[in-house]
Length: 257
Image (cartoon, rainbow, N blue to C red; front, side, top):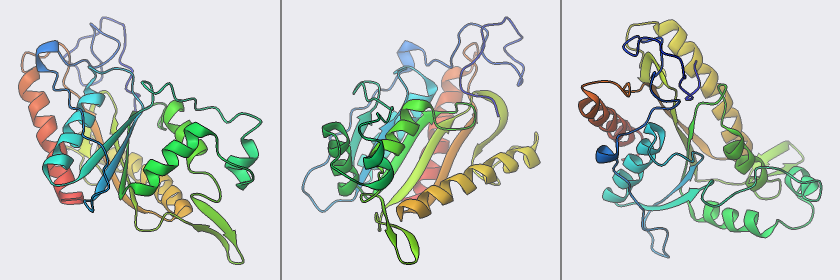
């Protein structure tokens, strides 16, 4: 499955196999950008959704999915906290000094990791938003997972093996994949182009997510994978973008609301 990186060639932009010829990314036109800033967590008893976003492009289709989802959660009674990893200048690198904290839980977390762990502790739903990057989270998002979800915080050793410590929480992923046209949603949501391949990819993601969820003790609520990104050159771009937003909110309703 192609990464959300686009291409710089001059291929026919109407082809499902080509990305946008005019840009190296799928970009929302300025007049259609719908930025949304969530209000953050409070001490209330409302359910809390933590959004961890690994995308520096505030005008990307991928970030538009984050805006849409955060707004929808708040409109449905959740409190939403945004952790924008690029704005935070979050370092994804486990330094030699903190390697054994992340791996073995020895010592104390660094200040930045402790802050993120406090947000994780308060949250009910943990939602990762990132562009597909070689079929995995991009480095800044993966580094957040590795540094923040450390041993003795997210999991511990027991006589029966490792045990997740983040009970009663869930993880969910929103991921943009560029413009191949294979599907939108998750397993079973292919659109008839190559459904066997679509499901093969989605099942592979489920294996990875289930394993991570079991490691941390959370439930895995799956993914919303968009592989039908509007082409930058489309004369129906606004209509197609609004349909993508509607498909996402409908999926969130089914999964969370």
